[in-house]
Image (cartoon, rainbow, N blue to C red; front, side, top):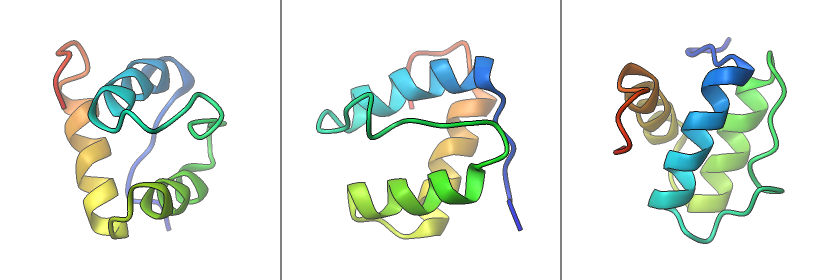
Length: 71
């Protein structure tokens, strides 16, 4: 079950924030389609070597402050 929902418009902003925080992430690493949140979370957890809960926390934080450039 997905703990978070991300639409494509918001994803573009979140993606930029993630690339600023994790400079090693490429555009290919951050491919996302609406409705694939679980796959995204698991993929990001592996890429940045963090657990699933941390990734969910980070994504929620990015979405709450969507107009802010910081994560």
